[in-house]
Length: 120
Image 1 (cartoon, one colour):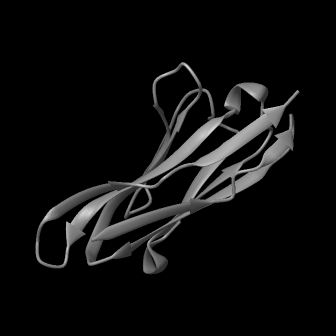
Image 2 (cartoon, rainbow, N blue to C red):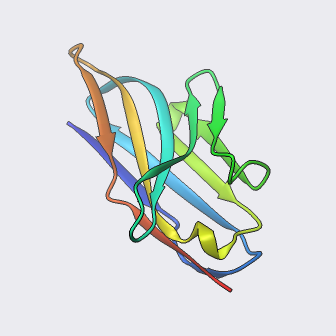
């Protein structure tokens, strides 16, 4: 019913930048919150940043000032601009979208993830 697809992960040197994209598609009436989460090997998945339809954002303390989340509501797409990357940012980054389907049901969907590797 809802597909979430991420792109943009890559291998980058410390101090570099990457831009991740995530697009949601399907029988969507509206999307409330879209967000990025990450999971490094041996660690639990953690919140990176979220953004609401109205543009309210939330960031993990570890990425504040370096990462910026933005959203194109018309395209059901969310972006994560990552600057000043550090080796500890290395993880699989996954996108989540939640909202309402055309026939009224709620949904919460995850993408398959995209690998970000930061070399020192």
